[in-house]
Image (cartoon, rainbow over all chains, first blue to last red; front, side, top):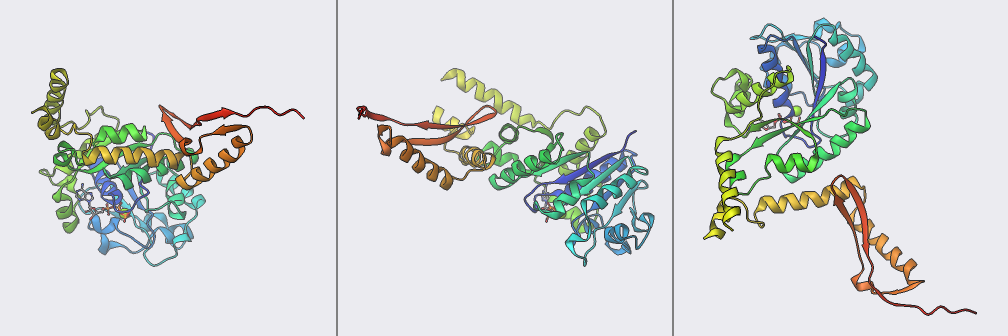
Length: 265
Length: 90
Ligand SMILES: Nc1ncnc2c1ncn2[C@@H]1O[C@H](COP(=O)(O)OP(=O)(O)OP(=O)(O)O)[C@@H](O)[C@H]1O
Ligand SMILES: [Mg+2]
């Protein structure tokens, strides 16, 4: 299998890039793929704590690109899953300590060892973003169903295209089906329509994300987590399987009602 | 009765979701065209200046907008003319 470098990005901060990276990485590794997650959020390292690996860090991405250590030395092996690794961001170094060229070399190096290389991008559209996308084959954009997040996603999709990344797919995160039903939240169709982009998956708003982050165990490891189940589906899709998109059973019934009402009017 | 059902089933056009969708559409048209409403206003003023040399136009009713038609965005101007100026040959 040819390895894939996927960058997880969003523009707007705090919409779930790190959560998505951790869960998709873990889920892909649970499908017996070899996976490395690269944290490029230099200065705001977070992927390590979401994964519960914060106590194992010795070297980081800046050490690797500087040649202060070997790539192998900086890779942290997950404690639960055999084929899962993390390359942590530097916490104290300068944001510009890595260049796009170095990132490209790094991801090419990682391609030799891994099926999937997931790059967790920092928020914003500056240097950190440029670095994160430099070695990527394609991008996954995460957005929440809010105007500001979708607007920033649109901008990011444009910037990705300008950088030659055309196969961008969207994950809608933190969807609250009750609010959508009540007409108080943008629904997935609205967002897809406005952004004209392919949908990769939908992740519901779910308290289990908070709980699993507290524990340092991604939600995909918790069998009862709804968000975890959604991420597992997305992982299978990334792995080339055909998995039907998330459709709420009651959404369908609702659609029928709407059609009936239209006729009645 | 239907009104209530429509509200319940989210078909009401004033639902916050529909407001969000329309606002988002508009803001993205401007973002994508990299032109802000203020710049559009300046453009409109300049347009008036130029056209006034040739035609008598209803400046109050002049509309200049970006419109989204499927995948393309167009600058659409609606310029009501009050009367053609009589050509003056000297
Ligand atoms: N589906 C979800 N349900 C509930 N909470 C969520 C969900 N997804 C993310 N969160 C919460 O939202 C917060 C931000 O998530 P996360 O750190 O993954 O975002 P980010 O995009 O990586 O942020 P940053 O831009 O700062 O890097 C976290 O507290 C996380 O637990
Ligand atoms: Mg993050």
